[in-house]
Image (cartoon, rainbow, N blue to C red; front, side, top):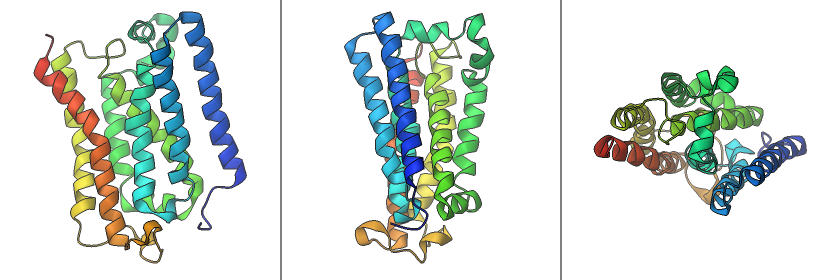
Length: 240
């Protein structure tokens, strides 16, 4: 464990946040009779959030583990949390009384901008190395990626989708996912280590820093596939 690892306070805050989210959902699901299978999806998303903390709590232990944790939040947890809520309930988010937040978080173009900017900004060496140097940054970065993924996935699900035509929503989401896949390709195929903090760190699994970076790119690529496949399916199937 490196000196940048989370303390007990960070662990407690992360766990408490997840439990509060789960309890709030349980109350709403019980009142609305949302069904056990939806509850199971939401609970799986909460479990994924807790699991991601292991990769976030000590960024210097492994770039591949850190990247996998971030992608789990952005591309694994976010759709599970959304699918745990019925489409009819998601559609109600656009009603006037909830417009104060929905006009931003459910706007398709805001979602694309946030998703692409987070993908690019958080993978530039400057900011990424700052996050690696101090694990205090890893928790908020994880929350930001969870939010960005949630906003993007909301545009691919009925009820929360802001673009009426399914094929157009699929096209927009597919294009928005390309920078993420390009970053993954760079990490996989780069002949040198791109992030300086890993040069002097013994990575978990006894991998070399370059191997660890390649596996990080592979983790990003695999985690990004469901978003691309969902977007491609909507693009091909259209409004049928």
